[in-house]
Length: 327
Image (cartoon, rainbow, N blue to C red; front, side):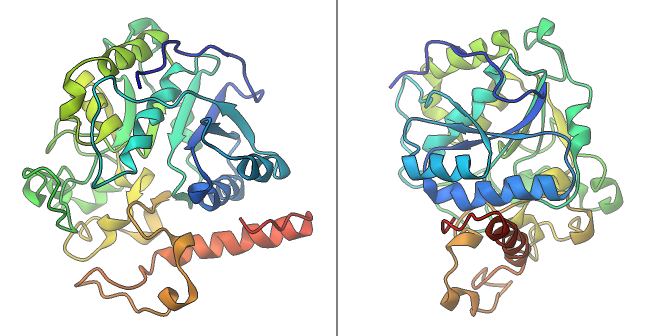
């Protein structure tokens, strides 16, 4: 399946705000995460709405859940490269190409794309106003978008990950000696393997930039892009993006002992990212009882309780409003 031929066929706002949060949703497996993400944005007092970017695979019960809660939504194309890339070891990456869609949403001045397995703990509306290149630069400037670095430590030692994904090549490792600075500044975009994490992307929509992305999706080199959207962005704009501190995309693995605990501070985190499995909402009662073993990375991660606290608050609010649909 080729990339979508049209950058944004329905360039009409679904909310009044010129600046928005967006999140991609393709199925109901991630719907509990999306709903808690949206509730967490409201809880921290964000001035900006969240839009659910849904593909044709998103089912009717998912739409009903969004509609009951008044969450705005917009249909987007499901993007895939022309040259097929196999992600049999990480099927989640098939969806990740579509996380590049916000670059096409030119009806908005600023889009901050969030993964649905995120939890906002502190207001981060400042991302809507941080300096980035305008669309007139057509992707040729030095501040095309903003994101945090990807962690390339491979702490779970996944054998199919690239051989150079080791702590020595991780941008976060370079910050271990300056933890105070790491709360406020990201390592340079050229640090380590220089790859952004696609979980949070601060974007100034631009037809020219999106066309560069579509052209890349149509090329032959996508077969070498092991991390979908992240790989494309680092390939197209090497060193020409703004590296945010980890607090805006606090990968849960960074908190683990002997990963990047040297820079992690619970109280500084603005946006928690529950990447990898299991997701907090997938935990059954038996799993919740399993004590976390930080050495073996087994059991229930203590940080998951933050998601449960936020979700319990959401469920209580929804029941007051007559919404109790199991999500």
